[in-house]
Length: 142
Image (cartoon, rainbow, N blue to C red; front, top):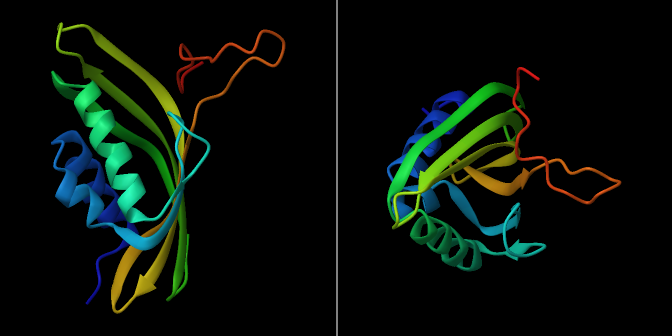
């Protein structure tokens, strides 16, 4: 029996929070395409995305103090699933400085050999069209 996307999303978020790169990457398909909010336009393949996740976790050398999914919404059939949520990510660097913000997360899942795998990952942060500034201060309550 396969786990539900809701259960898998919670397990994935816990793996991110614990900074366990092997557990995080176990959720992804080899042929993954990721649009992350950090560093570059896209990542093609699990190997490239693993290197990116590793860099992100190293940036938060003091650990992730929060990684929260909110308003998770899922649509699925027996082969394909689509989920989206707001995600709050907060971590501290080696100096103990804490940074965090709300982002938007969309994930495309595919059933592969009896297991759900993330085939597409998309993190984004809104920006102001006039100034070009990223709107890190936005919250779900605003």
